[in-house]
Length: 382
Image (cartoon, rainbow, N blue to C red; front, side):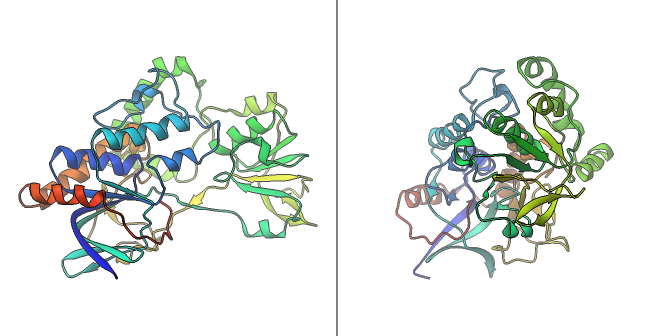
C-alpha cells in the first residue's frame, strides 16, 4: 500500500443510511469519514429510472435533524431525494470522500483495515452502509435470447426511449416491474411476467399520505420489529416479496398490459413462460432484483446463508463492525428513510460507548483529511 491513514470510524457508503450514522456521530463529536464510490453524494438515486418516486410521503421521508424540501403529502422524485442527500451532507459538514471504491475490509491486530485501491484506512470501527442489494440479478438463460432483443435490467432502465420498436416483456411482477410495465405500456405493447406477492388494500396517493400512512408507519416502525412475534413472522414472509403499493393489477389491466406467468427459459431465441408460452418481444426489462455482495468483507461474520450475523446491526463476535440499512434490520421500516435514523442512532450510540474521550483533535484531523485527494481504484459500487 502506498499510504495508510487512521480514523476512528469509517462509514462505507454515502447513501441515506450512512449519512444518518454520520449525523448521529456528529452530534456526539465522534470523528469519522464517509466513503462513497459515486462521484457525488446522491448519485445512487440520480442514476435510477427517470420517473421514480418514493412510496412514502415527504413529511416522513427525512433523515434525522433536517426535513426534505417538498410538500408534506407529496412523494419526492428520485432527483429530489438525491439533492436532499447531497445537501444533507453539506449542511452537517460531514467529512465525505466521493469517487472512492472500497475493495476490502479486514482486521489487523486490534484495528480494521479498509482498502481503497492503493490506499488503506485503519479504523476502530467500520459501518457497512452500502445497502442490502447491490448486484443486479439476471437469469442465465438471458444469454440465449436473440441478440436483436434489447435487454435491460431495471437498474439500467431510464425511460422508454431506450427500448426498440415492438412489444416489451417486463420480467418480475414486484413494485419495480409493475411500475415500469405501466410506464412502458403508454408507448409499447407490454407483457408483464410473474406472480405478485399481493397488494396493499388502499389507493396510493395524497389521501393515503394524510390518513393511512400514519397508521402504516406506526405499524412498520413500532409493531413489526424483531422484538415482537408478529414482526419476526413478517420478516420471514417479506423475504419472499413485497406487496404491490402504487400500481395495482387492475391498473395494469386497464392499461392493456398482458399478464403472464413467470418467464423460465428461452426457445428459439425468445423468452418462454412456465406455461409454455413463447413471447415475441423486441425488448426485455429484467425486474428480477438484486443479490447481496459482501464478498469484499474478509471477516468471519456471515452465517451459512452468507448473511451477516448481527443483533440490530451490531455484528456478533466482531466488536466494532456494524451494518445499517439492511432489510428488517430491526423493523419493517429499517430499509427506508423513515426508519434508518433510529437504527443509525443505535449504531452511533454503540460506537460512542466503545470510544474513549472526545478526541476533538482527531475530529479536526479527519475533517482536513476528507478535503485531501485520495488515490482510488474502484471495484465496488456503493
